[in-house]
View: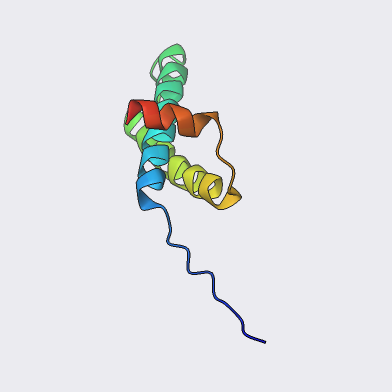
Length: 78
């Protein structure tokens, strides 16, 4: 019985595209929230929060294995 390892390379190019798409989306949404909250928060916090969430969500999306509409959008944009 031979055990074959699945040496799939991590799709970094797809990950970067998804990260940038999610980052733009989350930053835009955060900007709208901050605008309607009369800009009481420092926008830098929203950018850092958006980057962290985008990293996690893009990684989870890749590990999920399914390609969705966000993949089509990221391919069209980038």
